[in-house]
Length: 113
Image (cartoon, helix red, strand yellow):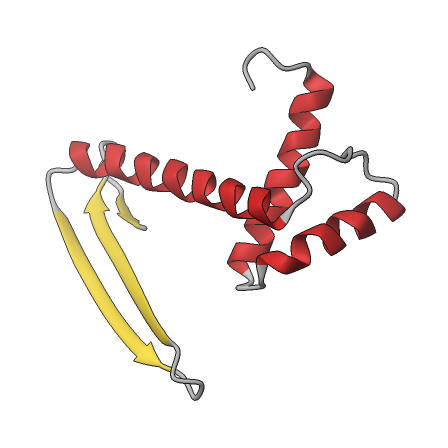
């Protein structure tokens, strides 16, 4: 992305935002092409490349890796931390795990990730 034009960077940012929204809302990646098509109909310039379910998964993994790396950088600097974990199973027998890490950031503020 560093060598891309600003228009290309903007286009890719929109694709990443749609992928992030799908993951955040726990929607299937199969909805990605349809949402991109709707965006096109609304006049959003997103092009025709990277519009597959596979790319949505790839973008989501890249976003997750970046978020994890950012938290790890902060955790490595932290002098104190606490890990809180919880799990549950819903009516469809889908198990969910949640992990919070609380730590004192380098600026002295308590952070929860």
